[in-house]
Length: 148
Image 1: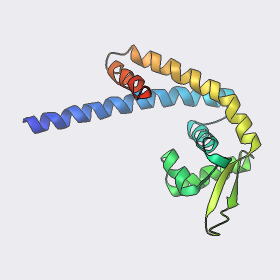
Image 2: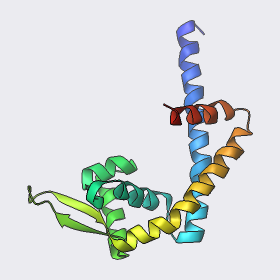
Image 3: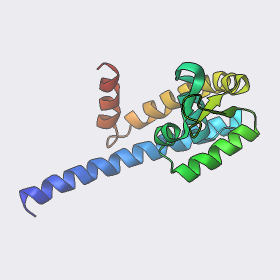
Image 4: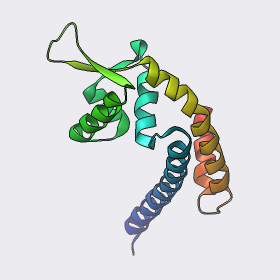
């Protein structure tokens, strides 16, 4: 293997480590959010993303980017959350073709109940990951990002 191949392998190993960390954290969050709040991680992500927007709404395309889902998967997810009364869709006043997804009061209330569960589980999962030698440098790097 040449130097160029070694660099590619280092990046590939870094990517595998990141994927392992992400998978581990997501599994813990999924279990905790489902048990405590009947929410999936991606449902929590939608409610959280909407709550961070002025007016608690986003266009569907923005929501798809925020959740890393396809447009069709985002539409199905929004339909489920809308059926539960956690969000609603409204027409854009400037562009009648545009549709906003907006957080409802019930969605905000559920998010407020789920946030401590999410945050505590995330902290515990990161602490556990930091004890794994292969994951420790990545967890430390995440901590450094918060200071930037």
